[in-house]
Amino acid sequence: MIYLDNAATTRMKPEVRAAMEPFLDRDYGNASSLHAAGRRARRALEDARETVAACLGADPKEIVFTSGATESNALSILGTAEALRSRGDHLVTSEIEHPSVLEAVARLEGQGWRVTRVPVDAEGLVDPVRVATAITPRTVFLSIMSLNNEVGSMQPMAELRKTAKGLVFHTDAAQAVGKIPVQVGNVDLLTFSAHKMHGPKGVGGLWIRKGTPLTPQLRGGAQEFETRAGTENVAGIVGLATAMKLACADRAADAGRMERLRERLREGLEGLGGARVSGPETRRSPHILNIAFEGVDGEAAILSMDAAGVCVSSGSACASLSRQPSHVLKAMGVPDDVARGSLRFSLSSLTTSEDIDAALAAVPAVIRRLRKISTVER
Image (cartoon, rainbow, N blue to C red; front, side):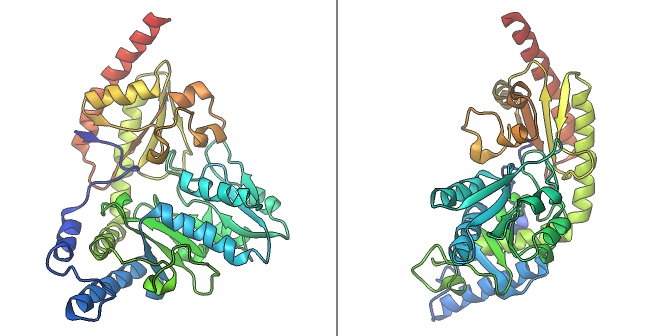
């Protein structure tokens, strides 16, 4: 299997699995219990919190562990809105956010909040000037993702921070951590997720700047500084910390290698002709390539490539069951027929040169066959 869908999820690294194993078997105590088993779990939990904080350049007391990026995004948006409702009723986001952000925002809209969804340019980039124009005296919150999960556009976070001065600024950095430099100084809330960086599924976290108003959304216990109730997934959190430490330590080298492999893949696929790459030329993540092939249906291509042993996707895994064209590509002005044929190839630190060679041997045959079928059908 040639796995090129790493923006959806990544394979767990052996070091991560090894770090988790004791807490799945021997040290399985509840981190809130006072006995020795509980204290061992608590020690592992707090050690993991310190590791994550060090990777982000933060204080351990600013790290809250969750079940993943979707929960972290919901906590950020719904919790901040509830805490700030007396100060205003308007928030700003972009048109290309992850579905977990857009759904949380839509929920607030149904509760009477006013929402401005700032458009992006043809490269999927947010213009800070447009954000500044959208801000009103009633605006209290801004949520802009650091790195887009479908086309790889890297947003100008430092410039957006200046624009958002006085607002609570949240970023979904699930795709960014371990791939590009992440500066918590630019935001007040930052979402991250383990399974995007070779950690386990079902665990993530939220960095919360000290003093940021936030109302808990899960209640029923005093865990996570009374911000997120529920027994902590100690094994998963240890895995998250290990994965983040590895990703951040090797980020620059991994990014350079992924970029070289991505460009080789891009050049090979563009050689087929009738190919259109979506996303920025310069402010692009090293691990994502979004490309459409003229005369090819995206879903048919995904299934055909799967049969050939190559795993790719058409965009966000959380929206993969939708038959609608990608909302990200639509916001970028990509025509519907092109958007329906767009494929996302995404690499990781474990992607090899041999993987790219195999993909370049298999994918062209699939594309040519589908184009031939399409021509016959017309």
